Image (cartoon, rainbow, N blue to C red):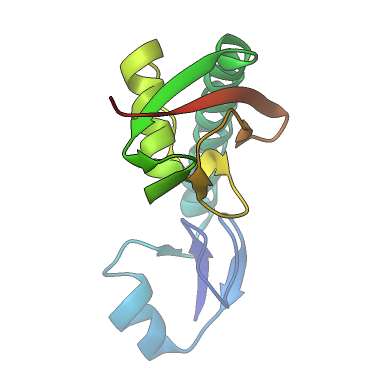
Length: 148
């Protein structure tokens, strides 16, 4: 059966592709989950319209993330943690950095955007890269200070 994919499907294809699948797979999996449509001229037009909307929505999202990156670039955040001299009792990772950015700058950043090799386990002022989208990066200075 020929179907047009309405979304990206692993090991099968991407949005808008026309693929040949077994009848049972189409009837029992793809069509009920609205991942595909029967291959007709009307369905092709509908998929093309969905693709255009998706491209516009993605471009808008990337522009918003670029604005956030411009706003955050060069800024700093402070995180307080329990420490014994230079060594932290725990660690400072992406969740703590995202929470500090929201608390100080009122900007939501996904945890997946924080680029860390490993969580920080000492006091200091490391620079952290935020990779928000393709071409939208920001470097934020993180002040890790001991609780008093």
